[in-house]
Image 1 (cartoon, each protein chain N blue to C red):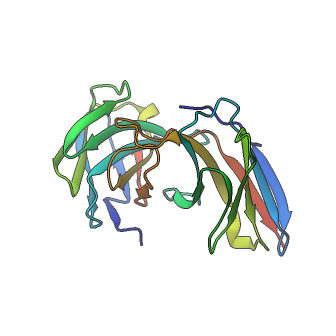
Image 2 (spheres, one colour):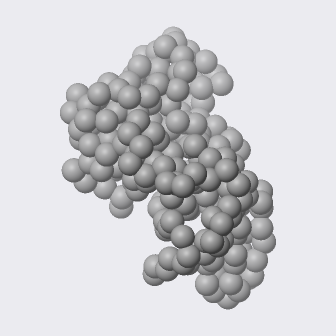
Length: 114
Length: 112
């Protein structure tokens, strides 16, 4: 148990659906991250929020829309996805944003787009 | 951020010591070296972090030579449960607006 909880664990959606991934951390951290991990590829950083402000958007398509209402919660809203978006989506948190900060990851949401 | 190079894969047997070396020739003065472990279908887990010389915790040791252009993660007496992907990352301390970028990592396979 890392203190970072992601729901749902598995999600299957059609290309016209709208769904949301949720991440919650109980560690008192101020930075939260979304990473994408496609099969046999490195983790790709998608978004970073530091003290509720988005600080990084790694050229992510607009069909992925993040939301960070407070330091404990992070959402990833999905709409009109493509089959190539199928991947493991990982949420992480750290005390604050910084390359030395220790990241705590959730177990991820395995997304399949049909 | 400094780029890292690791072996793609390594094989070992239970009870052996495993050393995974990471090259980071362009490491900057303020960069720290961090290692993560990832099991299939799970998020990575922090293992160890260091700046120079040697760091040891209950899981592993990290050896960093004086020039800091490489580092070695040492796993003592591995077991089957140590089969995982191991990532080496470098990043600058206290650099605001920076997040760690993961490379391809080293897939360690431990056999009985």
